[in-house]
Image (spheres, rainbow, N blue to C red):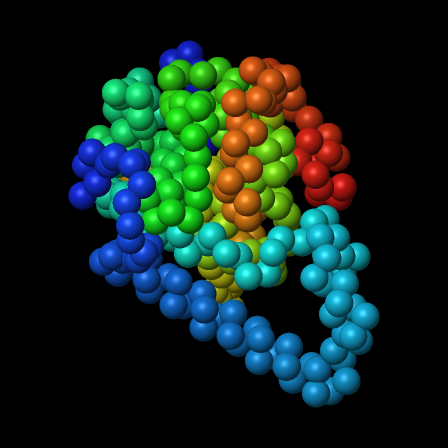
Length: 316
């Protein structure tokens, strides 16, 4: 994965003790807000176009509409996520808790910085986003995931036990080992974790993606040891001078934390993971210590069919 650290290698101090409150987005970065606005406008345009098609008699019948609510739908490739995306706003709010910039690196310094940003102290997790600089892509998205969980727990919307939180701490786990080792692995690491625990749904159809979905980008056709990938949070799509673009947030070269927009044509493959059941992370302590499939991707490349089977997608 591009930006993935090998296993070899404020909120300045946030307590996770439950506290009353309602999740809000404070001082969203202007660039992120602008990207989400542009994406919503583009999406609205597509919806208007779809409405015109419906008036012309091209809309799906009622049976197809009912089927779209099921987890599988023959009109798209693989599973269909919950349309309401109930936790995506919390993911975007978590992004706003991270600093801008800070530099991109896949050095030992970035590894140590992530360890400093995700700690277990005095029998509780402590998250220090500002300490996790410089950063790399999978570390950035994992930190967002943990910040989201912490904010939701503080707002009493989820309850994760200390045993669960202990399994989420970054401690140099090898690829495929533990929760962080799964997230940080080559291939569809995050998607594999979601599939194993039931935390959310994995899918590949860009038309179903919503701002706040976790996303793994593959810049080439390989999955595994020879892949070139990027772990990101999806922001939206747009069109610039007739060219479809995809916007996302991550730790990007060279500046670090922030948003980036690329032509859709540069992405060879993608998989999205939508948070739907965060409480199912209670299964994390019971996961096998090592996921053999993800661990093997350090040294081998697999087919899309093999990778799809590991994440609950029949056709990828």
